[in-house]
Length: 64
Image 1 (cartoon, helix red, strand yellow):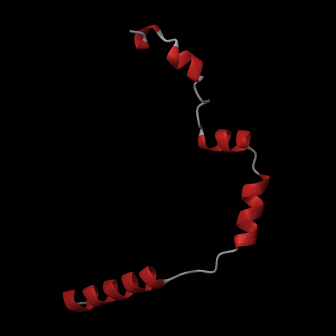
Image 2: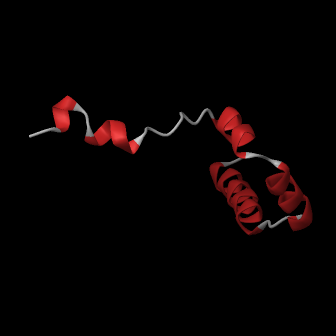
């Protein structure tokens, strides 16, 4: 296959992917998000626990 035909085929595939929009099941997404607790999300995404603001204000390195 020549370079022109190859490029045309790649362009066709790229255009197909660009404008492809599958149906989204918003109800399933809502169920998934509403059933997850904060702990589940923290475990899933490895979110570290929030630092206590009091510790930040009383830190010796922050005092002047």
